[in-house]
Length: 308
Image (cartoon, rainbow, N blue to C red; front, side, top):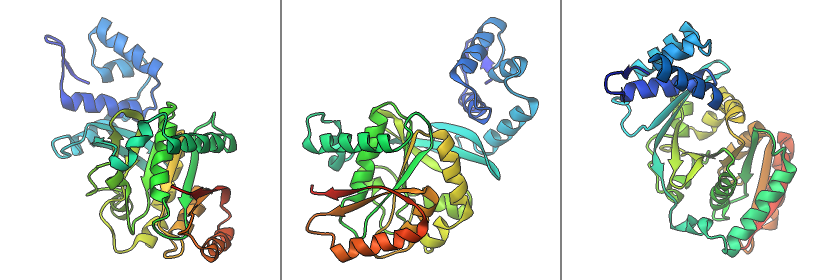
């Protein structure tokens, strides 16, 4: 981060470079504090201090400098935060876009006295007991037989509940057929998971207003080949990287009775929560979903009957 030492001004591009270096080198908060102190006392740039403290190598700095030059904020309007992560098969880049906001269907998530919110918190507790909540990498997909069963809404509410505990949470809309998360969060959906998988571009995450620990990856514009995209090895690599970055990753999926996408996603996520809705979901539909899930070797964490 080149600082104008006479005025103490940090240029936007330099701030992006320091953010990228922090993530690229997996620098801890303590590491950043050491670098910041060195910048103050030695009047060094962020990169100079990191290099002198042996917290980064010249190669690290060259890598992030090259990326920042190629993907400057001027070329990515609306981007407010970026980070480079090392991942299997190369650098997986995460870029955070403008803040999303809870829509009307999620306003109750902030109401501690809401009956539905209390049910969500109870479900959150059950899931944390079933998972190793002390470690990162708790990834699970929500599946339901059909549409209009409340799966997407429940995905969003669970992700919010985990983030409210201060746990780093990623909500992924992998329903590339009838996506809904961008509607629930009043967010743009021009670029999302479909473009990340189809074009090999970095995933563009949205922060959520009032929930600093929550990130949202929307579906992106609907592609012509959803099943092929979620079967792509890029998706495996993304989830492997998310396991390292987040405490909880909640994945929304398409209806199992209509498409095979959810079964592929369940295979990669390895753990699923099945959802049905009273007076909507049929018993044969649920039975067929469980039969098809059996061949995926995914662990079923539990079942939720949606009465709301």
